[in-house]
Image (cartoon, rainbow, N blue to C red; front, side, top):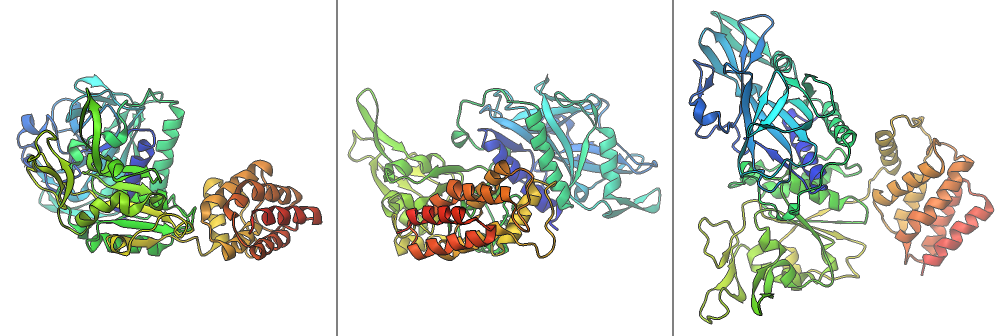
Length: 583
């Protein structure tokens, strides 16, 4: 069971990916400083900001007074009006479709007596129907707790989802002194008081009390993601996405990454990425926390390496990243940069995709599809922790002008000719081990600059299929103990010849669900499942087996015939098709 903060990180990483796939972004207001309020102060006599004019404009927390002198306890805003500032976001790019804010309870223990309770923090999450209109680099949001209106600059912003995120078990106790006596207040009491105080009015929905999600419970974290996704689908297609690509968007002002302590880095388990061994997360986190900056994920095809790379980058400070897929056409100009025509007959140095996004992780998928040493070779010295100089001048007309340089570490006040990485920059790359020998190779010297993590196929194939079916179709028949899984038996025979991950097996399951709806994947195969399996082998699995040897083809065909109880004509068809792709 993950902790509430671990599940929050996992949910935020998921939401970041969910929105990014639609060219949108997610803002977290006030999260980068830990418990620090920066220049903001709290007046524990008035139960408000020390300087309401300063802090109320763009607050770092959403303040609530939680009155412990009454029973049941109640929550209210510090001011005399029902609308209060909740946080801010960089909306300048016109791509922000989500906002998370931190609620700081101020426990009232008597007249003019409040206790700041950072340890009872609750978060609020709002998801918009598409991006809010482009604004400034630090737009303030306010919320009216009686009407459910979320506003930016005085104008209402429609949202499709709102929820309170609890980070602690409801029974967690904090002891304070109220009217001269010790009073135990539970986290659940605080959350309930906040829920009772906050009305929501989502777009297309009915008004009511804000929903609560107890993230100390893994099932509640899953429910939160499901309900956000359901709200998004129910709202229909969002307005046109922002014109600017997400990979070109500037980092949010509220999530600017400062110096990173490697010991604090933690990539949580992705509950939606099934079949990943726990050792993979252990190794990733051990490398990150030991200071290894660049990660290489390698292994058989279909094991989830690309999804895992995105998850790693989304879980790191800032949560922003850029993804490109390797190509044999690449040169160092594509990644690093080089001289290019800029119009008017002029030529100048144009930074490549890495230097244009030197403040965030760069994911290179299928890295060995490019000439690795040629493409990222100019980074060799930088990856070793030393500065490198590029063969390009800042002023082509002046042979004595500075050449461009790439620095290995962040630098405040970097010169015009210097490219300095942001603290969050790193390379996260993937390689399919099945292609490793046939495509471009990485030199040993360069490979040492990466931390390598092997992402294998699941060890329990039937267990994976059981888990996947249960997750994607809760109404599916539950296998009895000892039930055989024919598809798992065939997968095992395939892996004996050439290891493949879950992705093609999932494709086979989905195809068989269409061809044989409602039929079980466990126990003796029915005629419908048998026919569907033969078609799925043709549609999904054969392309993954091109180039296997004849004996392996025969072994797989025999395994399929036995597992699915194929008729002689069906078995002969499968064997013939497998022989056609074998060598």
